[in-house]
Image (cartoon, rainbow, N blue to C red; front, side, top):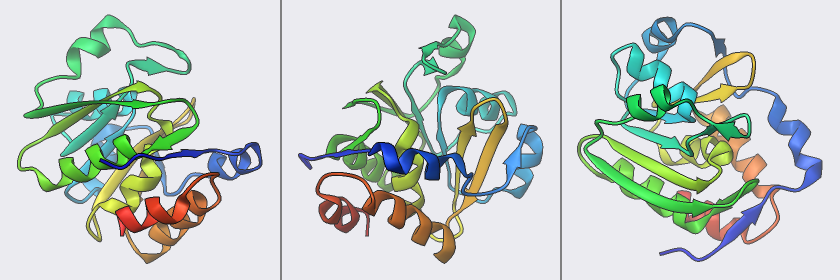
Amino acid sequence: MSEFVLDLPKALRQDLKEPLGPLYTDADELLAAATEPVVAVGDIVTYHLLQADDTPAVALVDERTKRTDVDEEIREAVGGFDHRYTVDNPPATLTGDLLDALLASLDESGTTLIVVDGEEDLAALPAVLAVPDSASVVYGQPDEGMVLVTADDASKARARQLIDGMDGPTDEALALLA
């Protein structure tokens, strides 16, 4: 188990507003462009993928959207996964526990739901580094839609750069994700 916490500095927050990939408002269109395995980050994104009859290989949720609890309909719909982890990950951080659960999930057969006590918003960054080349990571862009990131050299370099800009033992986190 990795015992570290990376904190998002205020100076890096603006950099995260720029999507890492194309933006979609229709889940079917997004899924037509996505490649397996798909990792979904966020309750609403996961809900939309499930409503489109696609269960992501890994989904990370915190049962909140835009700082409020998700509707009961969404909470109930986000289920049916083969495996489940619960991890602590405070807002604006990446913890070793979250990274460990993500990596373990990608090694398992079947589908995995990671329920985050805290916030899962930054999990797209390590997911891009952890998934195989050409795999897809989908995360929400508030009030705009869903971002589809295809894991390639450019997206991995950008994710690595953003993680490296965080406060804490970034070398340890990046080594874990390598």
